[in-house]
Image (cartoon, rainbow over all chains, first blue to last red; front, side, top):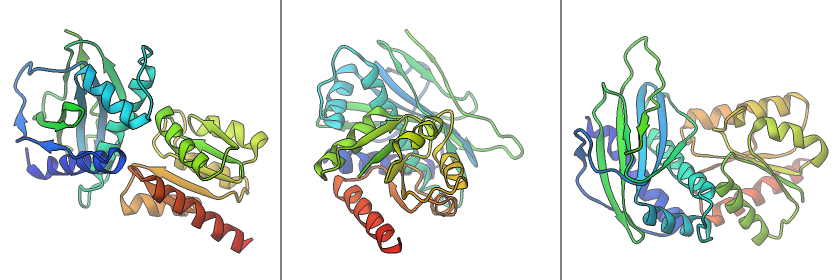
Length: 167
Length: 124
């Protein structure tokens, strides 16, 4: 995948964590995901359509998600996971929105986010797009941003919402 | 001052509400999308609205167009992840008074609210 599709997501993720949480994010080398790579417990998913199409997945282990959402909302996450889900959805929304703004000269729309919560689930993007995992770490723990996008085929406009599967 | 927050994310509404409280604004109502907002503006009659763009059922831009189409002048600040210049232009054309890109700091939101209300008061 062209790194021009990856760098905006790294920059956007860092910007959100620095602006909203005053927290730096360490980013390791992005890797092409092959098959059932290790996954996490909480995933925020957003589809992209337009000149670039595909999906973005923000995945956390449950404890990391709880810590980050506590910082985000200023309140401890209780047993009700609705608030956790809402906050993770907003995070992936900001990451995708911030990234697409850096796609120079492109018109790209993002969907409303979906959130999957479940131990060790996997999220599968489009079969015809390479999925790149961006490993990230912050004071709250490790998490991944998975980007599965490609330039839109001419004359074909499809929504890139992926399927998920609980393990 | 009565303020209506229109955002599908409860998290984001809570963050905005917290900033507004720190600014001394406590008369705040919430709507979870454009349709919900349209149903509330009649009875609540806000003095300011903070409106997200991407929402289910009715997005923020459609809401602004419909609201302005009825002749309402209440100032609107779009608070959104949509950061492209073309989007900002679309929003301004639809009748948005000011624009805040997510993520934002409390200072940025406070400043935009103050400058929006100052401009609106000066023009009235």
